[in-house]
Length: 131
Image (cartoon, one colour):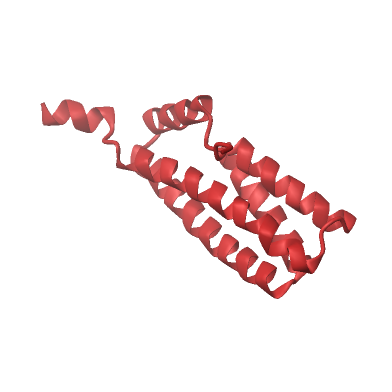
């Protein structure tokens, strides 16, 4: 079985660095907003795929790709870009649409779990204050 795309170690380190340099609470809040927006968009993408709505799927794939690109989820972006490209070129038809969207949703869930786990790790400052 192929492993699902996750955030690369370097991206997770960049998230840690940003949290240290600014405010961990602010970064955790940003991650929460990103995930909430992505869940909404991916639910809409799944619904559009079930309905065979190619144009809406293409728009939503592009929107999700942009969001995850800014977060550094390269593997997920590649899956969304491939979906968007196939939709734009006519290589994908309505009956096969959902079968292409479902793996993207699974890939998102893997990234989502990784980000949720990151938000639950206490900051270094909190760890120092608790000792």
